[in-house]
Image (cartoon, rainbow, N blue to C red):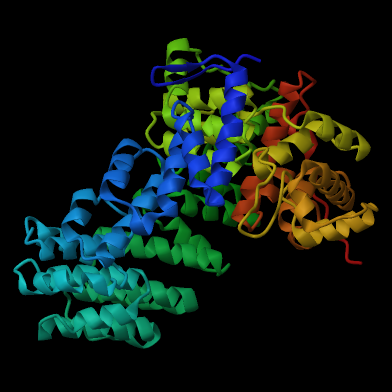
Length: 635
């Protein structure tokens, strides 16, 4: 295969040359690690036109950072500032300069840092070199945080406290940030720096934090902005503990204090959310009273759940009247459930109009709407327009070349780091071009994630690759499960990233939990199983598909319930089943109490239909992937 990589003005047109460079690169790495500097120098000298040459320079500099010369490291940092590892190298070198008291060199090579300690060292360096321009303003920016700052900031903060920039208003602003961060200790410390009158308000806020039940009862505060802020905080805090009390107190306080309309609306929205989360009888009334400007995805979510729980279709029709709020991408969900509410209240023609318009969307709700009126699905696939010049330009970016080469060498973690470092400097269109490149290399998980980062959803071929086809087809047949459903679930679980690891500990393509893997491996007689093997498709797919089949059998062939059980566990799904009578599947899905599982089920069902289309097979209506939800039978 002819491999052509462009780096600056150098073209790599010989696969043989590239293979030799790869061997020399690995040999140079080994020589450096074993202290054979002469061999390293000889090999690296011949690799200056190899994309990963900067990695050798980086490794060399890091290996001797404690004695590196300025004339060695400074040119590297200037020339390779796009190298992800250069940031860490710079940080460690800057800390070394601090330990040596080389403040001027530190300042000359300092770049903006996320590390607060280094930010404060930069202020200290400016103090030590009499470079005070805008020092106080920069110190104020760092100081204004809801968290405690490291002691390295103290010298600059001492000057800030003596300046006219430090006002009670500024201190109160930081107290507010501290309280929002739940750090009452920091807020108390800051309160002691206020003048006596304002200090009392800070003390009242701390008292409110500690005992909102006591201090929302006839607090006796003067009607000031400070009082209203503290009372608002107290009501919200009390609502987490006792929503009934919080509502009563709010109704009393609202009469005594001149809260602005915006302040009142914000408090009432929060009370409604707390009531809904706690399944309190007040929830419907409070949700109904939320000001239109404060309706967001969370308010709509709870309104929808409350209405569906009570099957109050008239209320739901009223709540979804008009256009959806322009927030959080709830439009399709809003329109679908308005149509369903109209359908259930007898306004069939209006409902059909809504479903007809919605059926043109390539989305879970679009497909559900299409099923309700017998319309065919619209995939709305729009291939990414190919622009050869733009593809060549993206392919020639050094970071993209390095990512490609690292990927080819199997160095996946640094390859991903390079890739995402490069994406941060791209437009949405450029990211889509990059996704096409990754797909062409067979790096499908990066293609999928890059299209998502670009908010580009039209090219379904790029977004839904047919990867691991042999083993997925084999086990969909062995387990006798729908192949598109299996593909859709893998796509939702891991985006085809074989070594995917979740924060909860799920592993591999089908995100199998270790204990589930162990039990399932035993049940199917899989020999020589170990948790680490879940990171390989050859183990993950047999186990994951077997567990999915178990869920399908447990829930009588209902893909929607089995999908939910795969994500949240069969015990939870059984507890969510109706106690008596049957339930429409779209209603049951919408009432799933775990937001993650709700979104997961919708995604998997939609993805399954996309894979029907990708396989050029008959598209199974999404309504056939779910069935009427039957009540849970007690054993």
